[in-house]
Amino acid sequence: MHIEPGIVEGSKILLSYGTAAAAIGFAGKLVVDAVKRDGAAAIMLRAVLATALVFAFFEILPTQEVGVSEVHLILGSTLLLLFGAAPTAIGLALGLLAQGLFFAPDDLPQYTMNVTTLLVPLFAIAALARRIIPANTPYVDLSYGQVFRLSLAYQGGIVAWVAFWALYGQGVGADNLSNVFSFGAAYMLVVVLEPLVDLGVLAAAKALHQLKGSMAVDKRLYEGAR
Image (tube, rainbow, N blue to C red; front, side, top):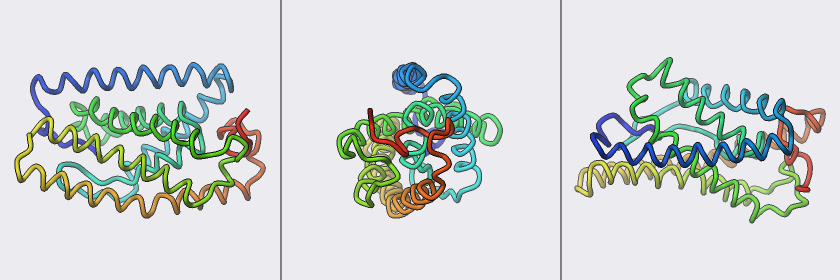
C-alpha cells in the first residue's frame, strides 16, 4: 500500500498533509478515550506490541510491487481484534514511520499519504465491528463471516485510498487506470488469507485463556462490551 515516489508531486501533496493531520487527530481522540477506559500503562503496552508487529509485517512478510503500489500483508483487522483501535492506530503510524526511517527513506515523503491510507480504513472497521458484532460477543467467538467482513472492509479501504492517490496524482489515463486495477486485483487476494489468520489468532487466544485480564490485549477479546 506504499504510494510510490513520483505518484503525487508538487503542491498536490499538500492534500495529504491535511488528511494525515485529520487521521492522526482522530487517532489521538481514540487514545485519550482508551486511556480513560483502560489506563495509560495498558494502552502503551498494546501500542508497543502493535508497533513491533506492524514493523515486522513490513520487513519480514512477503511484499510484491504491483501497479501503482506494493502489496503488503498488514493484518489490520487482526491487530484491531487483539489490541483495540487506539493502540492499533499508534502501531500502524509508528511502525510505518520506523520502516521509512530505518529501511526505506525514499518512502518518507509519502508518509502522510501512506499513514492516511492505513488509518482511515482502521477507523472504518472499528465502526463496522460495533455494528456487526453483538455487544455480548467476545472477539474470540467471532465467526468466519464476521472476520471476513472486517478484512474485506479494511483491505478494500486501502485499495480505495491508493486508487484515490494514484488518480489524484497521475490522472485517468489508460496506463494509470490499468496500474490501479492491477494493484486492486492483487491486493484483494489478501482478503482470502487475512480472515484465516484472524481465526487462527483468535483460536490461539481462546486456548491461551491466561491472557484474559492481561494488559497486553484488549478486554473485548475475552469479554462482551460494557
